[in-house]
Amino acid sequence: QVQLVESGGGLVQTGGSLGLSCTASGIDMKINSMGWYRRAPGKEGEVVAQFTAGGVARYSDGVKGRFTISRDAHWNTMYLQMNSLKPEDSDVYYCNYNLGMLVPVDFWGQGTQVTVSS
Image (tube, rainbow, N blue to C red; front, top):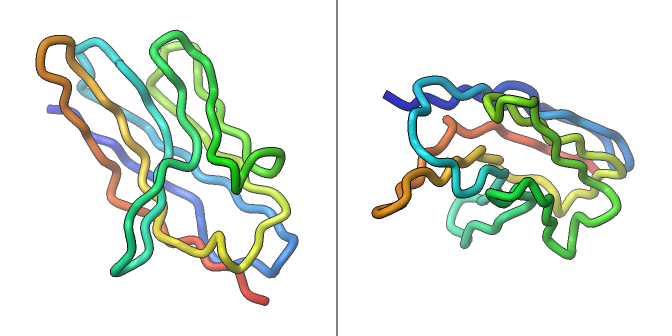
């Protein structure tokens, strides 16, 4: 049973920094990608930062230069360091693993609130 547990997040003022972490357990399939998404209530979700299967980090245009995704050597834990935060970064952040070869499946963390006050 794959489980993803998130921690971090919270409330910060504009320009501040926050970190998120996601610890995975029970992974016994090929990792196609791992990353962070965010979604505010009633809005479409978007990928914020992601590692491809080859380990290449990709970022959405809105967070490039401000956010950094990292992971441990075993791909069991990933982090998102968020700097220079803006009010528009306020969202619920979810970690995601896309697993499996023939029929890829998405697994999600429980979600962590990030609020940036102006």
